[in-house]
Image 1 (cartoon, rainbow, N blue to C red):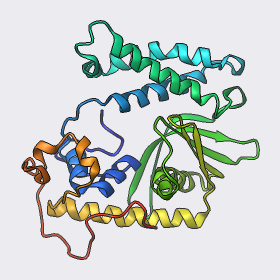
Image 2 (image 1 turned 180 degrees about the vertical axis):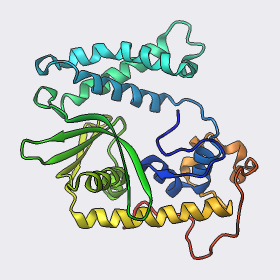
Image 3 (image 1 turned 60 degrees about the horizontal axis):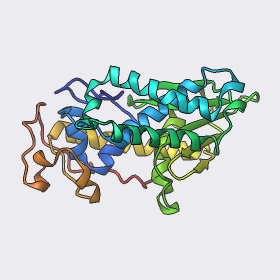
Image 4 (image 1 turned 135 degrees about the vertical axis):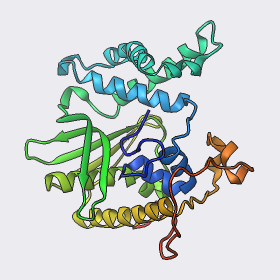
Length: 292
């Protein structure tokens, strides 16, 4: 499935989303494989479970407040899985050979448990989201276009805005919280530039561990994020023009689908589909997620 900032194959990137920004910061070559080459990747059971849980939590708010109960939410899981499978038949590969359906049943049970845990963290009977799965897009004065999809936007009667994102994994340790908040600050910047309103609160709901991480941004925070994104985009543009996408080996390489074409594993990347020009030595090839 193409994310919001991915061009057609062989076309230069035209915009930036939180996920693709994180890809470039993690490994510029991974960004190239996903955005420019658009190499296929195998479905992931964990990522697909996250998509399923997000769909259930979104659909639950279709019901009247009094009917937003844990049993009702759990009952939505099988139907939402069927809808997801109809849209993306390749996800059936996750359970190939599961003739008795035991693995699928266990996986659906894990999704139900995550949905049920949400009720210990938030009370949906007292929430009326202004937006769910909200696509946002804005163009900065520099010309950089930012895009993304926000899980939930709550607006208080006073007009204060809260941005909420569901995570099906565990909360990071405190020393890694800044990296976790990068996505939320990205969304807050987009909302600020679109609506001229700084969100009152950013909230990450970790269903895997039952934690809630909150942060209250101020304009200076978002200005720093904007400067960081501009530097990141300049690095992406330089790599796009030069064709130099350097791999950045980390422990996450073990989960990468592209080892066969990665130089770090003895592979050769596909022929670069764009024309190239000499790289500017003044531009860094990557930006640290923790940079401010």
